[in-house]
Length: 73
Image: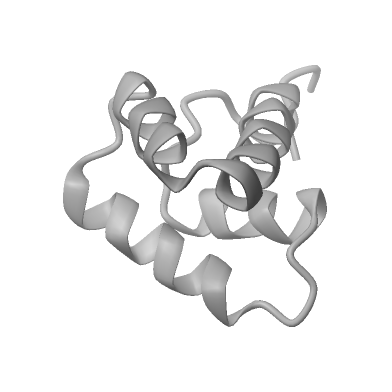
């Protein structure tokens, strides 16, 4: 995972637990399309353990990371 995805996952982890509307607004600020936001939230709800690493994988699966996974190569 790259640092950007890890940051996004950490923010979503906090926001999904405390304020789902703020989570939507955060993803909107990340310029994630609404249909992709729906998919991310649906998959996050299915996770057995919703933690930063699991959310980061969900975000990466939806292709919203603009930086390559291994930027220092």
